[in-house]
Image 1 (cartoon, rainbow, N blue to C red):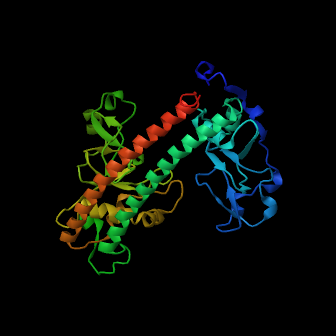
Image 2 (cartoon, one colour):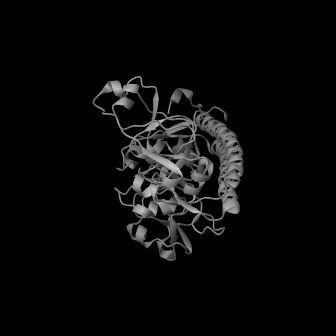
Image 3 (cartoon, one colour):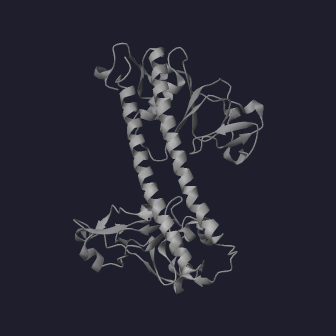
Length: 380
């Protein structure tokens, strides 16, 4: 922290001096294999979800009280808990602040604000322990918490609305067409190769800088498939790179699918709103518009995400390929029905774009409030 920008009433203290304890008895730590889906007591670990599982053993409860801050030693995730809970065994640090010195929720927000080095999947608590924390008078800490809580609730409400919008797409699709796997309305099933042309990308030789430097041709990777409409591709190649590689130019309106990729990437799809090429981790599906629309095809595949992933399993090297996709059966409803759905889809995407702008504005507001909060910007 920059002392020159802090109020005179604010102190700066070593991290360790702000804690009552950061220890957790080894006997109460619960291995992931022992987590239950339901139970009496929630388990908090360093993972993405606030509650990772449940436990029925009261003797496993964290013994030093709450509220506390949880820090993921590997993941750097920061959580707040003001209820009784059990502790996940791997890399979960539980920080109990000195109550007369530091409000736990204030500490939670401050740790989320603090920049922290990345050590990959190694331990990060060693970096956190070197930090200093700002400690305003307790009334000011509570004021700051109140302001940030209101801003955080606004973020949560915006995210809830976004989630509901995402559900609308799936619900309307099922209402019009039924489930893609069940085909309740007995429409024809055609193989993807009979209703679309499929292509796969390639990577120019990275030894030749002229294939990439000052490139103007979009070149996407599987990790770029993050939304229903693909409107931005950050990576570029040159005309020379395109000519001397297996990369192919995909058209606006093509459906792209991630053949492989880290985490949840494999099997994700999107509709191109820009012309682009890709590397070999992405395939394009160019619909025969006399038989199928881009929007229907995209959502059909999107609702079958788990099915697509299960075709090859979840091994590290598992991946989809053109042979699998070409032989994938697609239920093909009447074209006029597909076109009506496409109009609805486009209207919904316009709404989602406006929501994304609102989400971005709210996130910027929250970040500004966080910055001001820990530099004494709006509370004296």
